[in-house]
Image 1 (tube, rainbow, N blue to C red):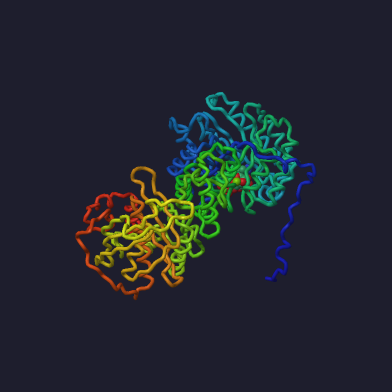
Image 2: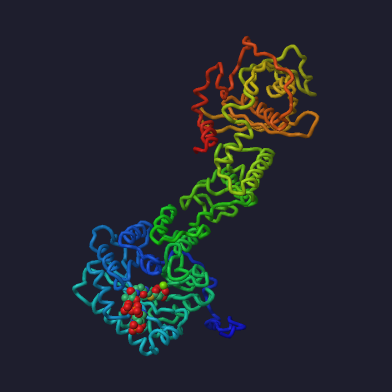
Length: 634
Ligand SMILES: CC(=O)SCCNC(=O)CCNC(=O)[C@H](O)C(C)(C)COP(=O)(O)OP(=O)(O)OC[C@H]1O[C@@H](n2cnc3c(N)ncnc32)[C@H](O)[C@@H]1OP(=O)(O)O
Ligand SMILES: CC(C)C(=O)C(=O)O
Ligand SMILES: [Mg+2]
């Protein structure tokens, strides 16, 4: 076979309509259209294994629950499964709500129309849908029909349909609506389509109350969405008795523009959209009703469909279609409300902080970087938003710690801890789960049950043996200026040490006491906040220390009901980090523990605590969470 040198030249460019006075570009979609779900027909007919009756049954009920009022349930002449399913819907009381229309599709073939009408016998509300191709390509290749024959067949079948539905007294219990689809509308001559539709309209004689539906499909998407919008505007302008017509869209997604086409075509005057959930359907699919609905939602227009539990919709769609929803599918995809990259995480975290600080509620105006939709509105949790891998920065890591442990890390600690996380993600070459990040944190800052350094007993008293620091200019001497004396017992690596020191406050007096063990730390930064708000509230304290005489810096974290004790634990955590980062540091002085020491308040994390606070420790929700995450059980 000779090689084509320019194979693309075999394609014909689409000729756009000449519509210079088009009005749609400046229109805004201000209300939801009439929706029709064709999941059970166009979606189903494209599946490798079409749904069985039970799957259709469950799917139908989900569509009703979501709020769809028009549902194309089957192609009844195609298979016994579809016919029986349709009859089951009709015959089972209470399954089809009174305000829901069952739509059934048939080609323009009388015997098939008859069977289709038979399948809905006894239904309350039915849209009988007939299709016939109007495009030259189909007329020539598929049907060998010219325009006159096409028009005649459309009229003949519409008349026949009318005679066995709304004109047949035996079907009087059914409210009939009629839909006609000039198949491949977007590839047809628009004037010929209007001519066919005028004739079909006359054959059906619709009313304003029950308009005829002209469904104008982009059976195959062949042009840019603006061209489809022009075609719809042209149809809307030129069809007569517009008030008796519902103009419906049925875009397919061959060029990947079905959603845009449906939106622009609504601006161009369409009243109704046919599509499927997550865009299942022939070839590249039908237009995605989830995207269309939630696009409206994020413009402040309710789509009249309830997507607040999108996960359960996905479950039904995936199991019925046997096709997974793409992780990046708009709104529903697993990854679409997740940020891995550092700058996105930072911005999202700041966005949530701003909402918290301004007291925003779930109804406050939504403005959040990188998130066009509040994940909570589709039933997704904030936990899942920020996920950490080697592309992540401090903001994302801090978010995880905040969500998991309610700890609001100071910036410096965020930087320090994010380096630890970065090392781990680089080392493992994968995402780290929140539980793994929490464990890294509790390990790094010694928040475990048996820390290397534990505060066993202590007391802090005024140190009257030393002269107080001179009062600042203009201030009088007060008890606040008195030096503090720390006396206590700390356990290091299982061995107890009795130490004492003095300073201007609790932290500096403990720092002074630690010097007797050769641990010489200066406090460089201090931050504390409360965790929780009730009587179980705790203090979280963060201390950054510099090793004396060097630029080596370490962070410590302490959590306790008592704020003073939280800060002492934080300093010991820093001391522990200091020793861990310098493993050869000797502890020169190890005084024996004195039992006579008047202990003030024991460290709850010490299992052998003489004050017996073990119970309180066990019951603390925060500590339990720490434990759970360390054990990987949260
Ligand atoms: C764009 C769309 O999605 S349209 C809907 C498509 N969906 C389906 O086709 C699913 C269900 N279809 C079926 O089960 C079958 O195709 C049936 C029952 C409709 C027809 O089955 P068969 O009689 O075996 O015909 P088959 O499928 O081979 O071919 C279609 C025939 O219908 C004709 N036809 C196709 N569309 C139409 C139409 N809209 N109006 C009238 N006739 C049509 C074709 O010209 C062809 O006729 P021919 O055999 O004289 O050449
Ligand atoms: C039956 C018609 C409406 C159809 O599915 C199409 O043209 O895509
Ligand atoms: Mg279709």
